[in-house]
Image 1 (tube, rainbow, N blue to C red):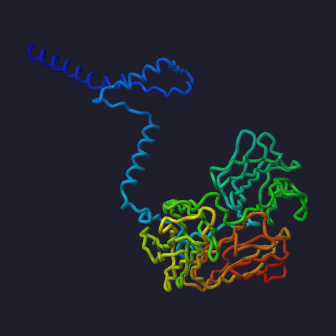
Image 2 (cartoon, helix red, strand yellow):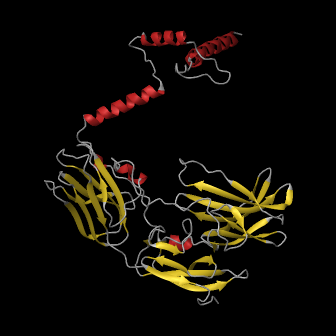
Length: 463
């Protein structure tokens, strides 16, 4: 009996101790800011009570902690960081280098990732999961085309409650998620002939067949059905006029970790920026594909600016290649005779505190040039519907992968309204039958790295 009494007394003491420990957590109340509106079933606290609580909080003794709101904590943290930077003259931002992600893939990666689906017009055709909603159902066969700022996907299908009514769904997805989302568009066929299926394309004009065997043509830029491949219609989505690269609305990034937020600099092109204060650092990124002589030039226009070139290897290690910090306001230049290929960053800054917000300096990147890539027309195949398919390959004489952007020296003529789907990474050697393009039999020219090759209905036929 005595043992049982001792047990219950001990259990009671433990329970009281546990309540003592957890009671402060149950009594804490998160109070909204005075400007925070009430939502749902929550009750807004009257202003006079908030004022009293603020006064009580100010009267807390020095041995207690008044926990500020999150925004106040963030502001205090930022102030502490700025104070630390101000009293730490040994901290140098040029010692903080970014890790690049634009190193070209290897030849094996590119060859193993070669698409096994056919290109159709200026897009590609591939299979995916079927899609549907309460009113429509669409097949898994998708025509997709990449534009300079978005991708366009088109599916064929039908009205769920009326199987004879065909329909087509156009989806426009912006690459930049911060931009305005463009809603999908569903357009029904002008004639009820059953479910529609995409079988090919000429440029941005799709060729569809219906469940009843009828052929339809759909113009993607105009977002409408047309009577033939040749019919001329105005575009609902006009050709883009954006120049590449876009002009920055702000100065160059002040820290190297932000250079990836800006497009890489173009080769052999003058760029103009400003030093806005004695402590302004301007950072730039560019890639050199070949090995050889690398030249970076700076024209400060009367101010004493410094120039530094840094190599960032594939492991993220950063090496200062060369710099020009000579005194005076003359031109600065870094020349590296045996520069390796890879990613580079460049810093421009004031050497003596002088700067000019009204007169920009000029910077120019001149990396080594790889040998030219040769475009090759393999053959042309005639399709049952009267269209043609051109098979293209290329030859890269360089011992490394060469990148040629499809918005510059890698284009088709006549050009599509949007960006084409040709490859941009070219592996070393002769690559046969790399991709195919559907066209109408008239001249279709692929311009690549200064060379050109044209396909038409009289070109050598595929076996």
